[in-house]
Image (tube, rainbow, N blue to C red; front, side, top):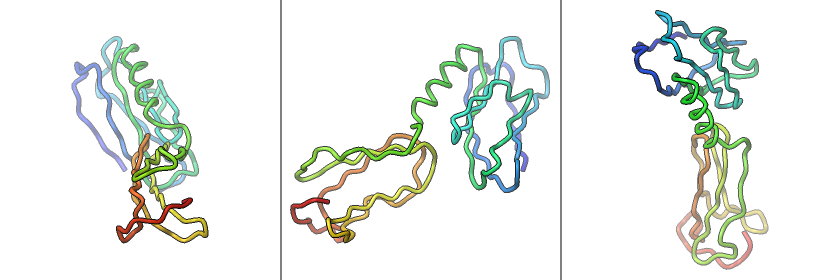
Length: 169
């Protein structure tokens, strides 16, 4: 598909979020400028899923990884060199590099505990509590989450809102 955005080249510093639907093999993201960019105006692209920064995006485009399909997220940054460097660091600092689920805190707990988790890209997150024999106790989360650092609180109740007995979960 195609999309366009009309911006004045006088707007020097900015970040645009792009969400592309990928439906074919070896898709390529490309861009063109209607006029030449002012001196000092640079562009960078961040591939959120791959954590790849492409500073020559306007000239060379970007080949989206071959095994990709569905929704794909990018950030495009326009500005001077200092602004681009600052924004790349800022954007990547809030996107974890890998999936992780941390130890709940406090543990043991009464009456609540917090579970923190990190997801490197937008995806469906399912966090379910089970007892020692593997019986499902409560689903805390089962929905699409944006990339980032997040947490959920468990109040020691089951799916019916009833308190669970003390034990290991």
